[in-house]
Length: 169
Image (cartoon, rainbow, N blue to C red):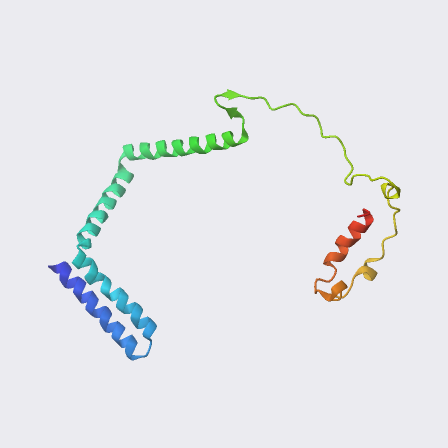
């Protein structure tokens, strides 16, 4: 009986605050207050207050056991060991060190043969490009937004073009 009185009192107070907010032309705030004000009455009428009280009591009992019961601590340690083993086996399995219960040796491989960055072609292009003296940085810098095509990117693509020219591409 006391629970019903408290629930409906809270609902009435919330509706009153919502009415004041609506009177002051704050309709969004008034709607929020009204929605929150309906919660206590709705919880009481659906019978969820006793459920919430039961849940609260059970959580309190578990917390007391957590602090004072060594069995609970043993269970927590076992859960931690289990999680650690699962994580460890997952990492080892990803590396491929253990496969189906037997260890496999990694295949012996020597260093990779040195290959040129660009495949040589027939003809005069196969010869390395002569080195040019690089222009000074001050001369190379351009005003931003005044590159080829006036795309606003400035010298971002100029560096890439210079590298490609040096490589003969």
